[in-house]
Image (tube, rainbow, N blue to C red; front, side, top):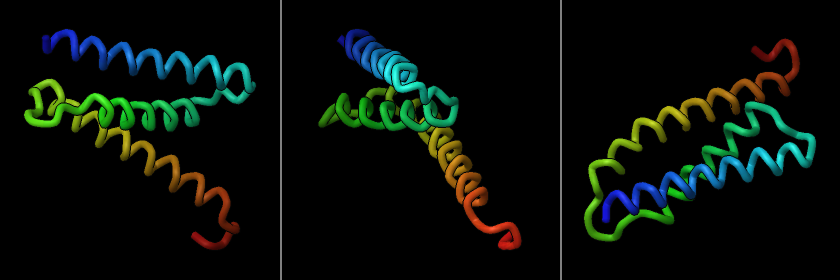
Length: 91
């Protein structure tokens, strides 16, 4: 039973990421940063949609470092983009 839920989680995440690649390619907007951000959003959505109500399995607890690393990467991308937008002498 738990293995089926893990598989469903992985299948949903892989389907999301493949869909993102196809969509970004069709829109001619395939960039690594954009793929990373949209994949992180997909990870967070899939985690929330597949979350159990009563007990959190151990394999889901191991997702926390992955989510934190993704949020750190997202923060880095946002800060870098803000610095690019600001005028030259601000920082």
